[in-house]
Picture 1 (cartoon, rainbow, N blue to C red):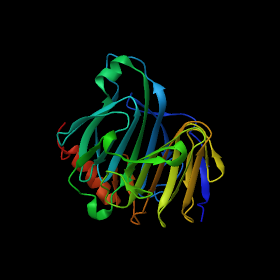
Picture 2: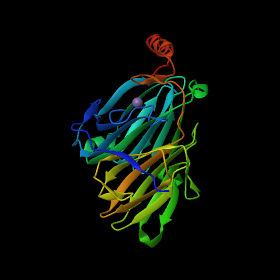
Picture 3: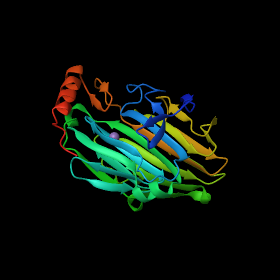
Length: 287
Ligand code: MN
């Protein structure tokens, strides 16, 4: 049975700046509540934008996260990061950083130095994935998922390619280890191409149109729109009338209370207060 589209959320009227290096439009939670789209907590999208050449590196300085995972997907440009666990890396186009903040981490995210110097098109997504209560205090770590490690499915009739970041697309699995069942597919369609897949029963699911013009289950989804699927049905078909890129996400809902305050997402207000105190006391480490 074909999935119903619950709503198509248009690109918000204006972007928000995260630091001075990420010009993002927010779809979760601005367009759909964290409960409704569980396990996803936040979706920020920086559509292609050229910040111009800069001698000073743009980005967001040291900040904490606790109780969930941040997933950074680079489409264009390069994002560099440092964290309080001693990790450092560069996320190039096609790469994904899957960071488990868990018990608490400090990090900073910014344009890679050489990219910053030259400027050029920058396009990226950051998705936050909740952790179940039993894993909220997991030791912080991250998975540097490079482009070459993605699951790759070439679609028939030169329709395009599906890069599987997490979960399984039509039998091909992605490299990300997740705490609860999550599918995350970077789908690149050629003009005239079509893709079909089925979402596991019970998953919440949605799709972001990164670029191009697509039709999703017979409804036109404008560029930069966000398609929220209903809970019934499984089948999703996307067809492209231009070259197009879409990000398809689904996940098993975590049916636990959500207490959310900025970069801290726990189950109770008491845990949020404790997280703020711990952060202020320097217990998230040093960066
Ligand atoms: Mn962050």
